[in-house]
Length: 380
Image (tube, rainbow, N blue to C red):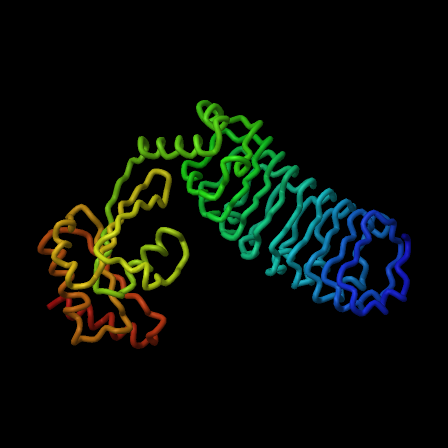
């Protein structure tokens, strides 16, 4: 097919248009009347036009667009105006660069850019927060921007057949990742915290063949994903230079568990009632490869307080958490003073950080006033 006639505009209910591997030379403007279109496949069909048909750009509800096997050197700026796109597929083009305009596509879930000539991923990709699939195989990438590791919904990340010499240390943030393909690169080692990618399956979750992995990474990786992850954990146990203890303490429902979860997982989430701490929970937090923090999260109910003194320690960081929204001078002792005295009695010289939660329920004036009142009462 070389020409899409004006009669296509009569197909008011058309939702899928597949024109792949045709030789289009003309597309009628009446295509824009097909307002129900959701999926358009133009793979290999625009080689003679070398441009996006203007009518296509008026399809504001388009969700799935395939432009593979054409000759584009960059993602057309006009395509970046189709803000409802969830799938954009541009394999086997001649892409040399990515424009910042691409990041306007905030609804993208599937972005396939494999088999091109990309050398860098420009800053800003972390704004595509809905991405679940990112295909960058067979390009010319020499490094992977750390921003990619903020795409926490990713379940697939394809980086095979590039020129990567290392992976970002914070790749462990991709906790939903099920498949990571880094075959045929120039990797010499893997990040020490990569074993946190717990959803990578043993069978086909991690593809890491044909790299320059140093011994023993090479030999261990050939034994499978689980073997590699156990090896990484072993290294950390031997190389951990800093071991700290952090104790979360404070009244019940102050927000201790929610704050601890935000620290450990890098995102804020209120703890549900069934997640509340009853007596004490122990957790191991590794914010960096050589930093291990043992966290003790105490339940705040008064019947548990008798056990607290057994764990308070002068070499630990004590995080005293209280609900700022509920604070008043009258309940200072219950929310703060009592807990400070307990720490200082049992762990003299300990470091203490006082954290007020639920600040979003207070005005800025209230926050300032309450902070000054707390400082006044602490100096008594």
